[in-house]
Amino acid sequence: MNIRQLEAFRATVMAGTVNGAAETLETSQSTVSRLIGQLERSLALPLFDRANGRLVATPEGQLIFEQAEHAFRSYERIRELAADVKQNRVGHIAISCMPALGLSFLPGVIKAFCEKHPGVHISLEIQSSARVEDWIAAQQTDFGLAELPFARADLAVDEFCRVPYYAIVPPGHALAAKHELQPQDIDGLPFISMTNVCQVRHHVDQFFDAHGVRRVTSLETSYLQAVSEFVHLGMGVALADPFTVHANLDRVVARPMRPSLDFGVGLLYPRRRPLSKVCRTFLAFMRESRDRCFADVAARCGV
View (cartoon, helix red, strand yellow):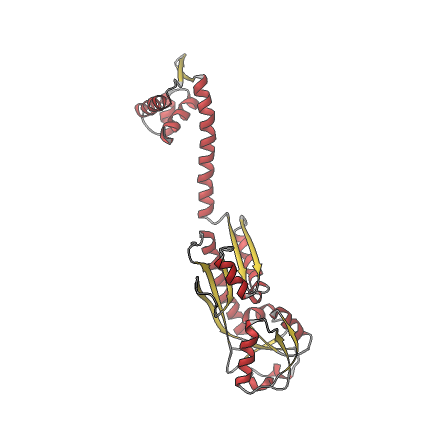
């Protein structure tokens, strides 16, 4: 028994004649007759009786027809699902992301993507970069975004971005009048810092130490979004990545640093699990959004 035999049988039951079935299937009557004969021999059951010039399914044939209908409905659903997957109308995307992007950049990207692909379900886990690595290694999400460099070597990694941090100051601050800042401009100023558990904290400390800059770090927090809020409230100055800057351009003043400290983000995947089509489509969409974000920040910050 195969799908062609069931297709010929189903069409004959519905049409009542071999000729009608042949027209439906766009094939010859002899082909339909041959396929039905093969099916009857395969099942060892008579499937049709002849009545008034028409073929009528036997009771056994009617039972087979009912099951064939279920099979063909499933077959059609598979075809429809395949078409939906091909057009990115359905699917699931699971993302692990560091807070700097998960709290500022990704929500807008996800909103815009879902407007174009409303049937796609997305889950976003916001975690530390170290936790993102662990989740990807355990294949708990499709891909992750975490700060470079990575501690693990068992992951597939692409560089998502490597761009300079910006200095951010409150509106009306004296440094806001400058087109760009040097590390020495921060000397002696209240500085909003990340906590010690954050990888970026150590990079920022090393950067200012290398330039002999003494900051007054009386306030620390775990999230750059909170850093930006404290800067907006006038509690100090800080460094922030372009994604956080972009989300807060109407609340803080951002200026490029010369020399600069780079912010590197990697895109992580499980090594042995290929990305789905909808994931690949989302990643392309996300990269386009990243480029627009960077261009907007550079234009508005005078880079």
